[in-house]
Length: 401
Ligand SMILES: Cc1ncc(COP(=O)(O)O)c(C=O)c1O
Image (cartoon, rainbow, N blue to C red; front, side):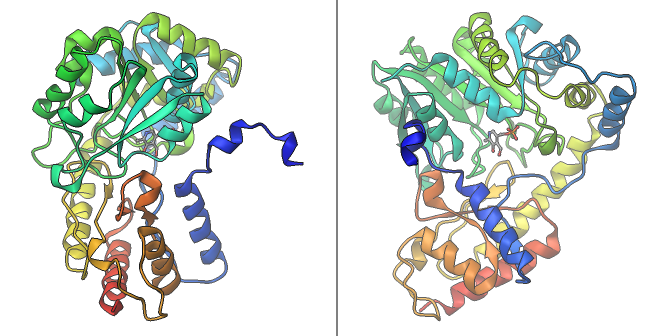
């Protein structure tokens, strides 16, 4: 029977974050007391003005097919957003709207990769990047970062990863899973390298733009280095910024010929993203922006709570990230120890499995993101839950011998 399935499937694995969240939900349903810190979505409700816009769109009959890559009103709102927040000039025919940022990235890779083409992906990376590259027939080239550089790629590391076959650098700041955010000066060091390699384009995943804390100021490659404008695809979306993960709207802006190629792929696969969600996204981008300002300090407080508590757990070292809603602590100090059940912690995967087993806390192991030994905590949940979960992690670590 497996002969029936495409060989493409042999190249990819299911999303580990989705699998772990499903496992946590399964244990919960079976009556276990489980706290899931594995899902990458805000726990807030979508703001009321956005919901009202969706209801109004339904009542007005805006429920039919739209142009395959988005309605003009949304493309205009996206252009206005890029101008307002990033100082970038894009016209509506340089914009593509898809069912989530995930589809935007997928379309772009499908539209550009040929066998042998390489894509540089700094690790730790969002789990889907390498698999999407593989699905599109390309070759992921993983460039490891380290905790010493705050999980940020250095110019030398980028230079070393580039070959004549490199087509893209996938850049993600603030990062899922590390929360690392590049300052304009740090990003400029990378864009300077790209200027020396005119065949390399940059796909920047700016999904966590608005989740930026303290002194960190978000910036994006085409803004920092305008000379890269013609070889940059700037990807963003409403999922994380406006607590709209289920609405499935992501977007990108870039050179017209690339946007046209992405449209061709979308028009022959899914066609337009939900018409109602598109109208909701118009309101998200054009309407009141107060949700962003009110949710940011809440996330920042949670970050500080989690970083403080995890650093008190024996064997764990947790840097303070600049943005997103994740921390990516190291468990180097736990490797080689054993749990009370006698299981030796040989990897971050064993650590996460035993933590779920013994304490009912679901986190995602670092190997899923390409950099070990670490784990990812999503702190997009209440202070009570975070305190409870971090206390359990402290207890788990205290029992390791
Ligand atoms: C870095 C990053 N990019 C893209 C996405 C996809 O976002 P969307 O839900 O809009 O498809 C996610 C979602 O987890 C993400 O973390």
